[in-house]
Image 1 (cartoon, rainbow, N blue to C red):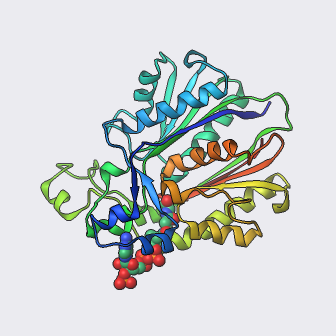
Image 2 (cartoon, rainbow, N blue to C red):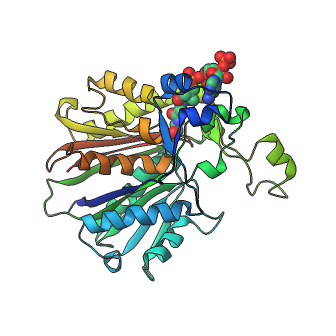
Length: 331
Ligand code: UT7
């Protein structure tokens, strides 16, 4: 029996930070950010809610839509690169916030690709019969870890906070549900998009010098990442279509990780799809929310009536690692 997504939800903090707000903090411009990335505004937390707290809010909506209670969930998968603590992972904090006791909680550390990695794990557990109702969440708080000075502008303007959630259960037919997932990584490029400190390589792990030199903030070789992203996005989409013998014209909606509108446009052009109609984009509202971007987009697409039962939906992501992945779902 295939696994199906039976409920989705998303939650973003109320605080809207526009490109004009960022102009006041660093040497950047609304024009630069819009033209290079498509981002107009993003959400930042204004309290100590953490990725687990954002995830819990998204999870409540997803559970309500799937018509289930916290006690019906039998496994948690939480994808994030911004855990509340260095350890333990955000999954257990979210579990506690939702009042769910004793079930397993697994944290996934695959950055922008984290939600698809998590979904892939859930898919296998459901198909094997090990679990019956899995909560998969992608949640991120970037704003507390960005260099909001001109030094960090190339990265800081791109990211936002938020969370998305999905309930995964056995489906009622082999014709519907998650048809396949495809996961990839290439660690040769690990340092092209990373946050070096504080890590376990160094003693002590955190120094004044690390803070002063900025190695505690994310680093990205933007051009290198962009180049690989377009190629890997397209390859991963091709892979999931070929694996299921589904043609590009049969796809109702592609939900790409929201990294950059220009990447989304390049991918749409390669397959002959139209951005907004067939390739979902909400980056203008939330920026790049890494592991949260796909589940947020899925829930928004459903709320906007863009996904109906029987539709072929492609999920695709690329990011730090490098990691990349795709999933084909017949809704
Ligand atoms: O989610 C994970 C995956 N992430 C991605 O896929 C992101 C991939 N990369 C990108 O989306 C793009 O590379 C960026 C949006 C990050 C940057 O766009 P770009 O066209 O590659 O710009 P660039 O990095 O080549 O920078 C161009 C110029 C530089 O100035 P010079 O050297 O030409 O004088 C930068 O210093 O823009 C400057 N710059 C900025 N100017 C104003 C960099 N950041 C900013 C900024 N505001 N925020």
